Image 1 (cartoon, helix red, strand yellow):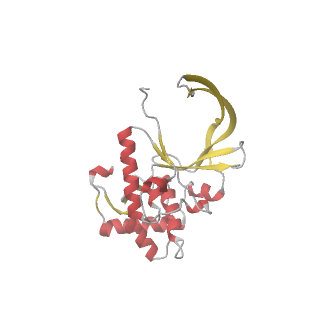
Image 2: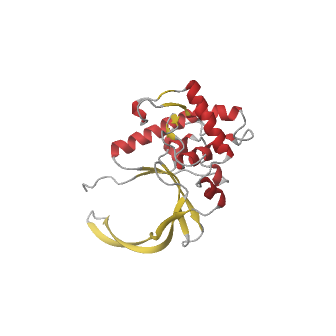
Image 3: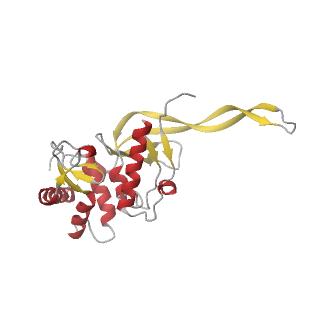
Length: 248
């Protein structure tokens, strides 16, 4: 039809990722890099469908690399079993606001399509078929997401965990950091460390909680600090921006 690509969707992530361990940081980092390269080559966003576990606040199932590398993470909220009072939630947006949402309702809509059918004698017949689909009625504004825990994360103060994690990150950069290659999008001369190294340091000190909780807590930590522009992430690197926003 000669129209430019506007969006590529893939559903679900595990079906095409080609990995053998959903919790493997390195494997998911490679997948995410390939998806970002695809988006750049196609000139449009690539939307990948994935799933949360039973506790949505713990992030996506599997490795934290998924949310760390993504440029945006969207979710659903509101009355999910209803067609009304739904929410599209922005959990993460690179260089933009996070933990905001827009309301929407779903309405049914009948679409008439023309379909060519081949009869037994080989002749073709055009038949009109009616299909019922859904259309979205968007709300009029983007608003902060309800929920005291998320509101605190987007406020003016860092939590104890966020502050401790930042201090350890800065210490790592000062003692072990390396200059980030220019292709990674960091300012010239910026130093950083690999995200996995930061995760290892936080896990060793039990900063992220008891064993079994560290991966989920690290996902939330990454999302919150990125949303507040306290860190910048470009797999596999993490660094502290020159002018971080928000009070510590």
